[in-house]
Every structure is written in structure tokens, then in C-alpha cells.
Image (tube, rainbow, N blue to C red; front, top):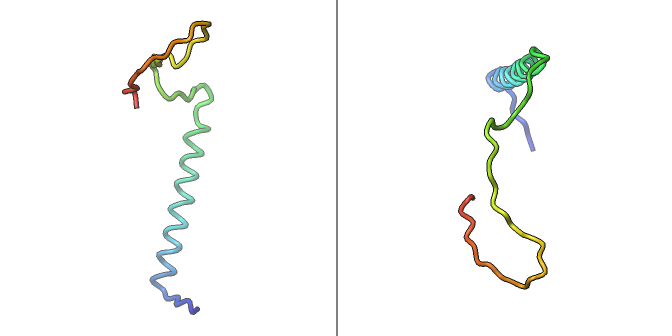
Amino acid sequence: MFFVINKDKIYAFLVSIFTVIILFLTANFIISSDENSIATSSGIDKLLPIYNVDTKDNKVAFTMNCAW
């Protein structure tokens, strides 16, 4: 197996590595810039359906979960 390396491939490789490094540094700066920030996924609590209830009665319920 032969690897062909020319100037264009070297430049493309260096640009891609430099871009990844810049993105990681930017993400690190954004994360560590504000000490009082709190990461959240949503501001509203989502109501979830009841999947099971512990009872002594033997009952079966047919439901459709449309939340997916």
C-alpha cells in the first residue's frame, strides 16, 4: 500500500487540524468564561405518562404512547 503525499494534501491536513484545535479552544473558553452559569437542557418541566402503578388488583390496560 502506497501513500501519496503532495502539498495540497499536507495543506488540507494542516488546515483541518488547525480548525479542530480552534474549535476546541473556543468551546473551552465558552465553558470556562462564566463561573455563575448553569447548564440546563430545558426550562420547562415535561410531564411524563404513568408507566406502571403498584396495586394488588390484576388489571391490564392497553395504551398508545404517542410521546415518541
